[in-house]
Image (cartoon, rainbow, N blue to C red; front, side, top):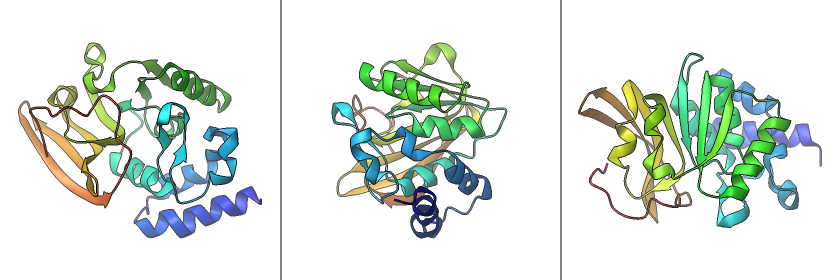
Length: 217
C-alpha cells in the first residue's frame, strides 16, 4: 500500500467532502500518522471509511467523524481539553496539536497503556491518558475549555457540563441507534447552556454512559 497516497485519498475523498474545511485540521490529518495508532492486526483499515476495532470491544471512530469532531471543538493553543474515551490515543494526539494540554480518561487499563505508548512514540508530551470513569469527568482539575466525547452517549451528564468554563463547549454524539446526532453544547452562564446540532452519525456507545441522567439534549 502506498501510505501517503492512501492518506491523501482519505482526506480528499472522505474528510473534505464531510465539510471539514479548516486548513489547520486538514494539515494535521496529513501529518499525524493515523496508522501508528491502529492495532497491527488492522493496519489495512487505517485509512478506510470505517470504525477500527480496538481491544475491550472498543473502536476508533471513522476518520471523517474524528475529523469533524476535531474541527467542531475549535480548540485553541491556550486551552485545556478533557477527552472522554481515549481508545488508541489518536484523538488525543490531534487535540494536543491544537490545545495547550489534553487529559484523556479511559475505563480500560489495556487501552490506557496502548494510548500512552502511542502518544509517547508520536512524540506528544502535552497529552496524558488516565484510568478513570469518563462519565464523572475530572472535577478536581475542572474547569475545562473543551470536553470531547470520543463515542456516543444516550444523554449528556450534567456533571460533565458543570466542568466547563463559561464559554467552554462540549462536543459529543448523542442519541440511540439508528438516529444519533453530534452536538456542541456551549456554557453561556452558570446555569445557561446552548446546544447546536452539528451532523447526524452513529457511533459506538461510550461505556459507563448507559444510565439516563437528569440532563438531556
